[in-house]
Length: 312
Image (cartoon, rainbow, N blue to C red; front, top):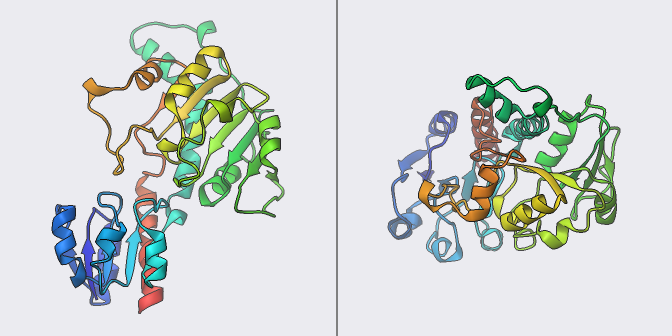
C-alpha cells in the first residue's frame, strides 16, 4: 500500500506501517496544487490540518482507500464525499482526550487563582496577597457543551472537586451517570456557572457561542474553549466581559487561527484579542490542550492500530 504523509506524525505510525510493507512517501512540503497532480498514486493519506481534503482534490484520488488524521477534528476533510466513495476516514481522539481534560482544568485554576498575574508580580519583586485572592471551584455547576470523547473525559477529570457537572449534546442521549447529569439546552442555560465547549467545527457550530447565545444563561458565566476557535465570537466575549455577563475566559483556541492552527503576526492582532491578551480575566494558550508528549504517541498508536485492523 502506498501512503502519502502530508504532515509530521509520530514515528510509531511510520514504524508500524513499514512493518506491514507500506511504501511511505514524504509530501510534508508539497503544495495543494502539486499534490493534486499525484494523489491518484496513493491508497492512503496521513495528515493533520495543512491541506484541505475537499472534493476538488479527492476527485483525483482514484485509488484512495483511507485518510488518517491523528487527533479529533475532521473539518478539513470532505466526509460526505469520502463516505459516498468508500474512502475510510480514521481519527484518534482517544489519544489526546486526557491531555485536553487536564489542560482545561489547569487553565481554570490559573484563572480562578490569578496564577499568571501573581507569578509575574513576584518575579518583579511585588508581593500582593489580598489583590490576588482567588475563587474556589467547589460548589460551582460546570456545564459541558458537547459530550463526545473530550467532553466526557473532562467530566471524569472533575470528579473529586465537589462540583455539579451537567452536560448537553444535541446528538447523544442517555449518557448520564454517577458523575454527570444529562440536561436539555434550556437547563444548561439555567444552571451553568462555568461553560466548557467541546463541540466539533461544523456549519452548526461556527460562531455558535456569540452574544445572543451567552445572553440565554441565567448566571454570569466563565467560559472554557479547548475545541475550535471559530465556534466563539471574540468581540462578543469582550463586550460581555465589560458588562459582567462573562466573568472570565480560558481559551486554548482562537477564531483568528488559520485552518492549520497558525497564529497571526504580532503586529496584526485584532482589537478584541488584544483586549483579552491584556486582561486578567483571560487565560490564553497556543492551541496546546491536546499537545502532551504522551498524547502525541497515543494519537499515533490509536490511529495506526485502526488502519491495520481495517486493511491488514
